[in-house]
Length: 152
Length: 85
Image (cartoon, rainbow over all chains, first blue to last red):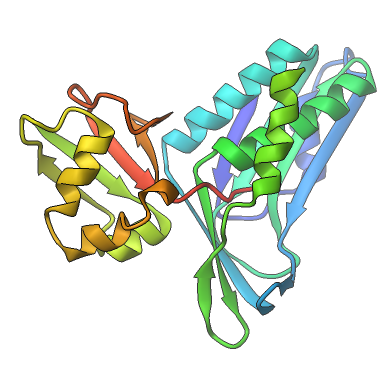
């Protein structure tokens, strides 16, 4: 298990290597990467700035990982989340799950992202090309996405 | 008892500072009490907590509800609903 907050970009291949080094008990690796969209409802994006709550972020992400490991037979998992100012197309978040079989890895990756989006203390501010800036509103669909994990 | 209060995102911008240490009056026992108290401390707090249903709170870095007691808290954070990922 690993959680990292970083201002610099991550390399997905390197992150996978860190999880799989010297082990042969993994049969499936799933990665999810979230990236900055260039288009917003209000117009084209110049940049996105992410802030977080140092300390609480790591604590929440570790709790989310522990919960995933309780629910699925994961051999490993990792979350990398960037903060600071990012440009359209840049990476924001990486989730990696590894298991002996694919179903656990797929499901756990979705679970980790759904929980991260509703629990981890990150906030996005969008700056548009016209110079206006606004905080991104939380989406109700993210709350709906998390609900399915609570009923099963 | 002094408690460290931290603000994030637009809550921070509306209050105009990232954090502060506040001596809590004896009648402030819960998160909701603290919000009412802060609202009485100035226009910036009234502005930030105008729609207090939009403000989330963590006590000692754990998500909590407005009814949570803060008598022994070291750190209380106020922020908008999270938008990471």
